[in-house]
Length: 154
Image (cartoon, rainbow, N blue to C red; front, top):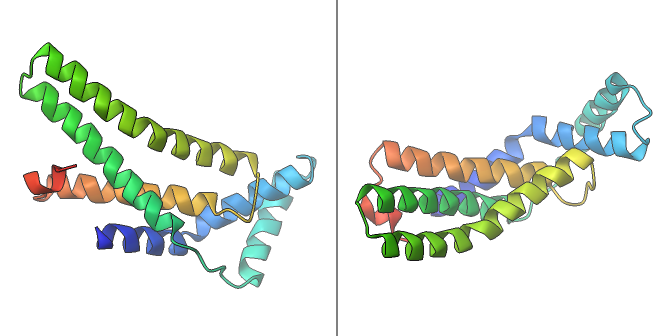
C-alpha cells in the first residue's frame, strides 16, 4: 500500500499537463471565459514554467488509495457474481460494497467538476485525479500480474 500512496504522490508531482490544465481552467474562469483559448493556454504554460513547483500534500496519495480501494470493490463485486452466490448474498454484499464505494465515486466526480470549472488553485484537483488514476492502475496491474487473494481482502 505504501507504493500505491507514494506512487500516487509522485505521479501527481510529475503531471505537469494536469497542472497546466488546472491553471488554464482557472484563467478561463477568472476572465469570465472571454479570453481566447490560445491566450489562456499560453498564460497557464508561462505561469507553470515561471513558478516553482508547489509542494503537494498527501492528498494525491490518499486519492491513489481511494482508486485502489474502488478497484478492489469492483473486483469483489465481480467475484461475488462469478462464484454463483445466492440472491440474498448478492443483494447484501452488493449493497455493502455499493455503500462503501459511493462516497469515493462522489469525491472523484466532485474533483473532476472542480477541475473543469476552474474553481481553485489552492486545491490540486488535477493531482487528486492523477493519484486516483494511479491507484486504479496499480489495482489493475495487481490483478493482471499476480495480486492473489490476499490483495482483494477488504
